[in-house]
Image 1 (tube, rainbow, N blue to C red):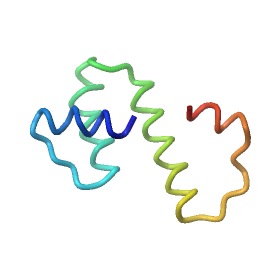
Image 2: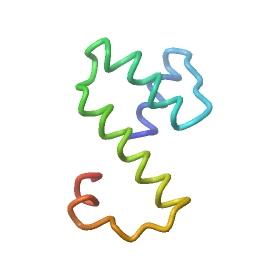
Image 3: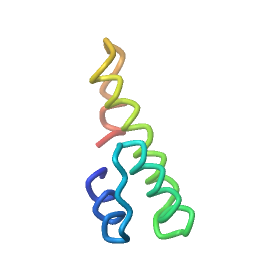
Image 4: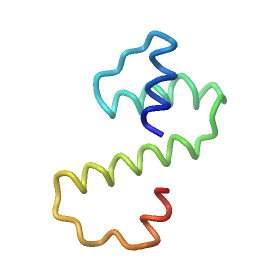
Length: 71
């Protein structure tokens, strides 16, 4: 999901340097202009939050339901 969003942004000559930048620019350029449903932006943002938690925090509360929602 992230790589697709980044590729679409690069195609429009946006070059975000962070994951947060990709999510933000993607929302502004594609979601607000109704090219993608708002759910896509919401999923990207929540998945990013979970990824950061998995990378940097001790996480033991991701259950099967949360994992399936991210797939």
